[in-house]
Image (tube, rainbow, N blue to C red; front, side):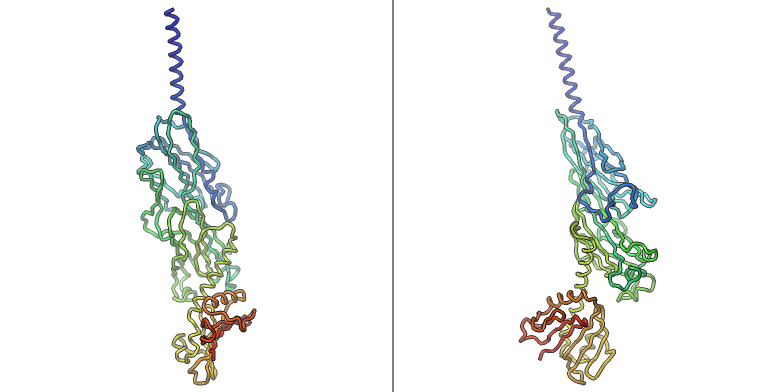
Length: 468
């Protein structure tokens, strides 16, 4: 009987031992799957294939997936990395870890070959400890959406139960879509290109901030910084002259990936063919630098932005991307907005103040002498949108002007833009206003007005007349 009991104890003991070992193996065998298949889901293309990694004119690209596993003290305990030719691939591996609390930093970035040149935009270093882990952009810029950087972090625990962990990496960069428009929007260019295009050797758009850096400082939540570098931060470089000479496309498309930051500033510089700046710009210089952009967007992770540089205006726009607005519709609005700015600058001279002045005083304000006179009129060259300024006087002494006439050099469709600006600066007058002639006064009430303003669509002339 004792032999039988002993035998039973041995069998039971063996069963318990096998069960404990199996439970330990289950606890250790946690599976992790990492994908970046949705990294571009919140972004939009322009031509339709810019996010294709293979088989396009935008290069041959590979996806690099990285997983860094850290223990509770921030020490690296496991890492897995792989390269794939498709976004649909996933990095799948087992976690060979003791029970405890851990964190994973999953990173997606890209390497590619464009026109025979190798590109890798993000460099990962110091992964041995979470305090030191950082990601720094390289000096190679390829103006591609594959500059996008994806990071997703997760804390997890290895315990008594099997837990399959899936991580879908999201972008931490925002995507800036850049279009440089070499189009002839004024009708003064050649072969569809802007008047400026044959004379601009190089045009570069810059941001004020420097090299982008991602740091973790022991936390699973990344922070963003801008390290030092010797040069300014280029967004895109383009040669309108080269594009014109080969009669290439009049729009040039590029992308830049930018880390989150508030109030990003942008500007551009251009270099003319030697000696041509004197014919293109008021200061006559071959090198020009723009003002900072009026709009300063807050760059956010996973958000898209659009930048348009219109060569005909030598003006740079940047704004949040709106997929419901067609790119040509957007440009038309920008052109109208810019024309209103130019019109307002022109009218800010307040030509109504010239009414009542003598010829000498008017010429002092205009800083020029009349190029043509009659007994009671004097004509002067205009600038910008105004081709000619004519002052009419009450008599041949030319001591008191009773009319100032501005002849505008604008297209018919810009008549309404001038009307809008006049309506903001002066008081519209219903009396005498027709479809083609708009009337205004220089005071809120007619009884106190000293100048009446007539804007005539027939001849694109703006009249400032003394009110008796």
